[in-house]
Length: 154
Image (cartoon, rainbow, N blue to C red; front, side):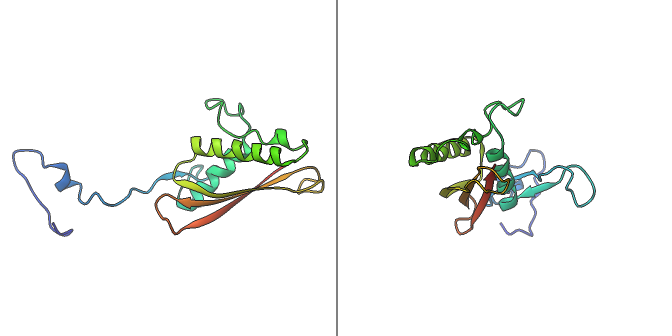
């Protein structure tokens, strides 16, 4: 059926495949834009989609410690506990496992293509020990769109 044609059925409800139109389109997922209050029209809440939504969600996930959110006590990654440990290969693998476990549990709409963790040394962004986490992500809706998210843990 062409998109500009309409169907009127009298006496009974039309089937959903007639009224809803084509079902091959994927619905775009929306989320809140963070930080709150950054709405261009001056409101508190604004909507975001796609790459910006995933980047905001990953930043929140990596910078939140478990137990920090009241209604979601398991949300987040315990990455700050690794800041003052010797960064051996075992420690870096533990950090990657922690990130991948939390990512699979809480982030929808993207898959991890590559995960890298770098020690920033004693003179990192905050003047102390810090880590740099770089995630290369692929959106579920578009296989050609690969983007990086960088988060500094200090």
